[in-house]
Length: 136
Image (cartoon, rainbow, N blue to C red; front, top):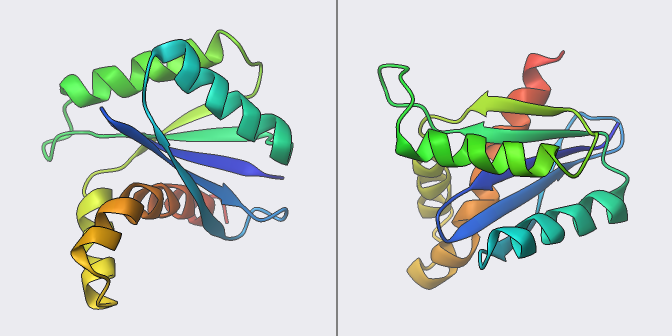
């Protein structure tokens, strides 16, 4: 089963995809956000291209577990996507996923410019891999 992982931010959407067995997550791309309809259309293209059967969207909770403005935006994106697809959508706690992605890229000695280009899709990988690991 192919699972799509999304790290929805204000300017970009990091995209990751599982292998067909649903064991590992790989980075796919970063979608530059424009208007909501175009953002949803870009995600729908990926869904169709890879025959996605489930979607996992990162839910950026505050450290105390409460939901803040960014979580509200992620849930609004989920609602907009759910309105145009029948694929199940799961919200996944993504606290510190971007921080973890930054640390991994720093440890790999990736340049600052390159980190900026890939951090969102690496965060999407971490979100998706966390979800996949929880299902085992």
